[in-house]
Length: 69
Image (cartoon, rainbow, N blue to C red):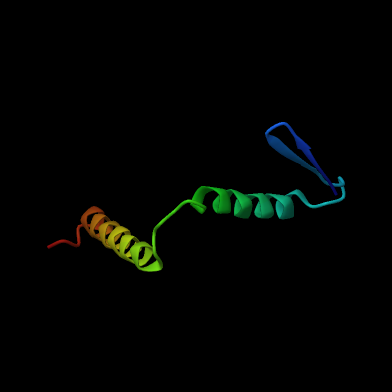
């Protein structure tokens, strides 16, 4: 593996023997870290949002299946 810094980028080179799916998993994690690095959301905030999203999804599913009666 080779890591290079060029201007405002960091280049990482892997051997072609490396599985691309494993590299993609690592890159996905790094992207997550980049996107959430400035977040001020608490775990409780995330839990509340998830609860709200799930509730809305269930209500839409019931409506689509005609279970609202």
